[in-house]
Amino acid sequence: MNRNLEFTVSGLVDEGPTEFLHVVGRCGDVALRIGDVFESMYRYSFNTSKDGSETATRIDPQPIRLEIKAITAYEHDLKELGSGMTGRLSLSGSGSDLVQTRCVLGLPISVAQDPLSSIPMPTHSSANSAPNSATGS
Image (cartoon, rainbow, N blue to C red; front, side, top):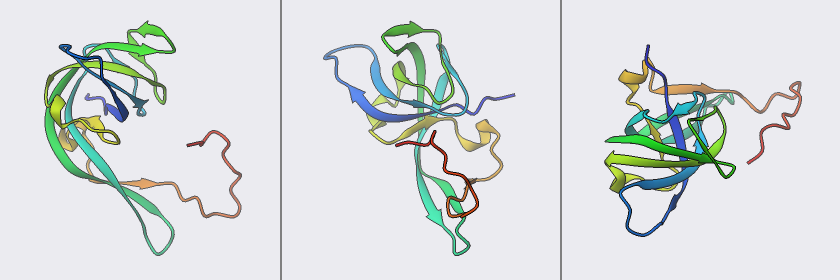
């Protein structure tokens, strides 16, 4: 079974000449491990329908092949970056020139076994739902 790897890039780290691309950001719903390989770089477009439901659609997919060589979080070197954690990845491979702030590193939809290109998002307009203090910016 394939794991649906995703890492949202919030910034690129310039360390001068180096063999690695260093990025900082947030891990998706599946933990990332040293040796995992990202094969696609894309963005999400968010749309709200008339009934208030939101969908996120992948846009501008680009093929890449970047392997995680090192993970750093909270000033520690790690073997795994847990779901939802922020950290820094050192990547090596092809497509590093395509990586930009606010992009998502992941797998192509067919490899991630995601049958749809749109992912339903929870609705935030319900008056009966309690506020979620865990959802900050």
